[in-house]
Amino acid sequence: MTEHTEAVSMSCDCEEEGTHVRSRTSPERSPAAATANGTRGGPRDVQPGVLPSRWSSGNRFAAGMVQQARDALSKTLGRGRDCGAIGFNFLSSVGIVTLNKRVFLAGFSFATTLTCWHYVATTLGVYLLSLLGLFRVKRLDWRKCARLALGNLSFVVFSNLSLQYNSVAFYQLMKHLSTPVVIFIEVFFYHQKFEWALVRSLLVMVVGMIVTFATDFNLNVLGTLYALASVAASGCYAVWAGSLQRELDADPLQLQLYVAPMVAAMIAPLALFTDVWGAQSDANLLVYPFTVERARLLLSSGAVALCVNVSVFMVIGYTSSVTYCVVGIAKTGTIILADFLFFGRPLEWVNFCGILVALVGVVNYSFLKVKGAARAKNIDDRPAAVHSPGRKMPTATPNSV
Image (cartoon, rainbow, N blue to C red; front, side, top):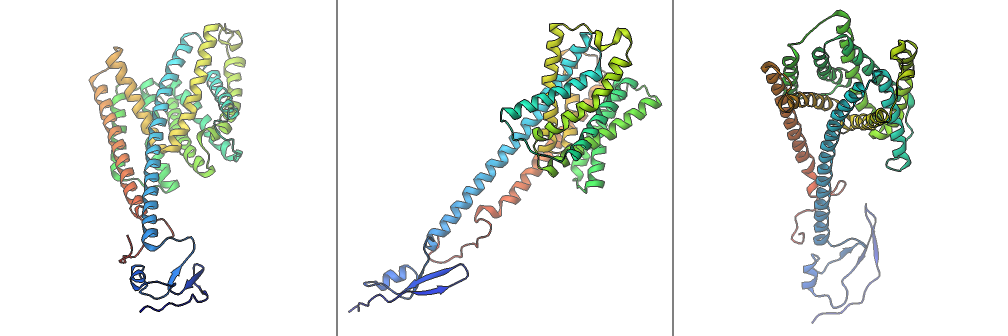
């Protein structure tokens, strides 16, 4: 006959995680019920707010699955964001080239003033976006932003001088040689490591560009010096844009709000000297006949320049400076190939083969980057699928699920 006992007073057991309340078996507690709970009639720990082991282990497993799903969704959205930034940069770059050609055909031959206007339009556009609440204005170190603005200015000035004193083919070739310069800076100054497969694909792209533009070289000493300075400035600007975003923890719009007005202020004196004070009477900005159509072209060019300047920081910040250079090679090859296929541009077979080689390198680079991202995702997700950080794995007991 089972004996009934009265409940005894609670005794407190202090453990590492807190104080556990312990009670003896309650009245009318059968040995079978105690065995089912893993106590066999002995004392049983009861911690308020904590589920039994068979429930808590399942709860931890479910929480791990939810966290894994969140990580997968976040990485999928991140890849979509990267592709969106690259597509945005591609379309806006093609658009700015087309609009600038129309602006120059309309008789507006003031390239320095046009560049200054682009950065003024970028400043006004980003400031308007901040007023609309599309991003949060963040206080940044203006000295570091000034260094990036100076790199941007150097890149623009030396690129224009390279185009002025060199042939278009040599200018395009030297512009794409910024890719190995970026790799050199990343490796020797920022201690980045690149897989040999990625380096091979980058070499294929550079060789393709050399073959593409090797038939139209018109070298001169001054033009070559300007081209080399443009390559160095372009590489430094691309690397600084990425490292500064990470260092300041700033998104592209926050950084552009500081950099664009600085660049505009630096270019404005050059524009006054080249297009107003030092210009001839028939090529002076002050006597240029503005019309409604020409003003509309300039406004459209400024709006697209805003998209270009923001998308450059997006591509570099979301991916890398090397990927930004690869996107530039892809843009050049695609534009030339489209001109050849759809608009009747004369193109020799040597140039055509060079473009195909460069695009093969672009595709191979993209494949390797996606493959590396997937491999990193599998490694990162392996421990997160079962338990969350800071919790011990549930042990395999008869009562655990």
